[in-house]
Length: 117
Length: 110
Image 1: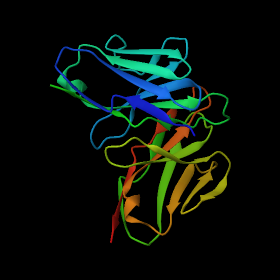
Image 2 (image 1 turned 60 degrees about the vertical axis):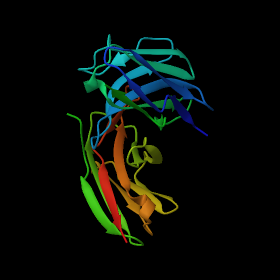
Image 3 (image 1 turned 135 degrees about the vertical axis):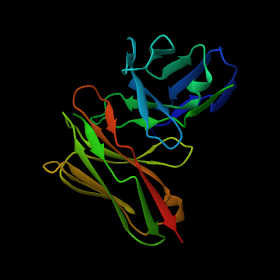
């Protein structure tokens, strides 16, 4: 149980284009989903917290107009990287917190590796 | 401020035991998590401690002392596949976010 999927697994795009990443909780409902970014050999960096039906809360330094987050249902959140540039190349990982659980356990998707040329 | 400290890297031998320590200072506390992350992959959940004491789960055990702001992850009968980074994270009471340590890279040698 507690499976989270991400699509696509990897994507290569040209500079200036937009890329959408989907995060789905497959066997549970998630009231809260989180988006992280991780550069090589570095720790996870939280980008934003997304609650179903409301606006995402972005961490300091993360541009909300560049990283658009939509959490339209209890099983789906999307991250759109708009006007991507090479410095946006990174490993993007989502996680989901199951609804109704007494803990704050987060279950992670497999990640999306984005390369911007 | 918020701070989680864990060693950057540790080396151990296949078949041995290793203990990875984590100390934390956070404004709130609602439990401590350990995750395993293999290179190029996302983290996977290992354990959760909210009460003081030792939680055993197969070859892995996790310990918590809330009064000391201290936890450790104990790995027994080490296997080569245990080579990974181990992330310590603390849950705060207010917003469900986890505060993450930088991770400990564990290298297993034959």
